[in-house]
Amino acid sequence: MRAVIQRVKQTTLSVDGKVISSIPFGLAVFLGVGSGDMPSSADKIAYKIARLRVFEDENGKMNLSVKDVGGEVLMISQFTLYGDCTHGNRPSFTGAEQPSRAEELYDYCVEKLKSEGIPVKKGVFGADMKISQQNDGPVTILMEF
Image (cartoon, rainbow, N blue to C red; front, side):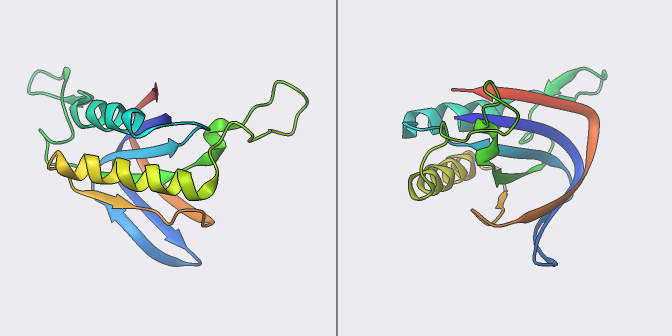
C-alpha cells in the first residue's frame, strides 16, 4: 500500500463538474493499493496517517497531527501510484490490485481513520476525479507498507 500525503489549506474533489467532497484544511491522501495488499497494511498506514506530526505547534515546529489541529482528511484512491516506467515510457500498472479488492481495502482504510476520531471524506473510487487543492508548506510525505 502506498500513500502520498499532502498538508493542505483546502482541497475540493469533483466528478463530472459536481463537487463530491471538500475539506477546509488537513491532509489530502492519495492512496494506492498494491497487488496482494492485506488489511494489515491498511491498519498500519491509517495508524501512521492519524499520528503523522506535520502541523506546526506554537513554536513553529512540525509537532502536531491532523487530529491535534482539528483538521480533516480527504482520501483519494489512486492506482497510478503503482505505475512502473522501468521498461519504456508508458507506465504499466500490473503492480496495482484488482479494482474490486482495491476498493475494499480503500474503504477499510477510510473506516480505520474514522475510528481514530478523524473526519474523513472520500473521492469516488474509479472515477475521473478533478482535484483542486492549496498545498500548505508544501509538505508532502510518501508512505509505503
